[in-house]
Image (tube, rainbow, N blue to C red):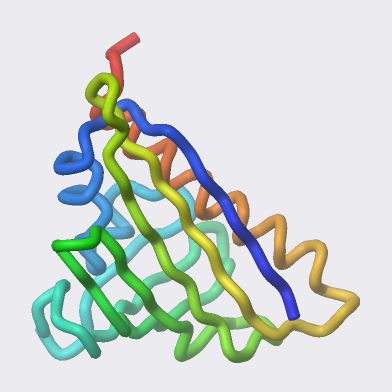
Length: 147
């Protein structure tokens, strides 16, 4: 079983980061790994059970993910992969944001567990780590100090 955990301090308030990351359908607008992201069947992007469909850039295939939980009170979301063009099964991930009490920053953590063939695990783990890390970097780029 593969496991990934990524955390970061973001140059955004909790409210800014949560407002940006909680939109389950907006992925293709800001994450450089993905494009053409949308919620199937026209459902709201914050409706538990909705399905996000998106394309990986550079011919990486398509993914479908289902929102399992979303809490504006605890700033958490959990989702699972329904389809991926890879030999992954039982993939579940969760993101959680917390305020940092000093300054206008936010702590984010994102983790996932899934089954993947042993000979593909190292590459799969690096792919997911990079994806999660880039989510947090996108928040920094959007809200952080302009260079």
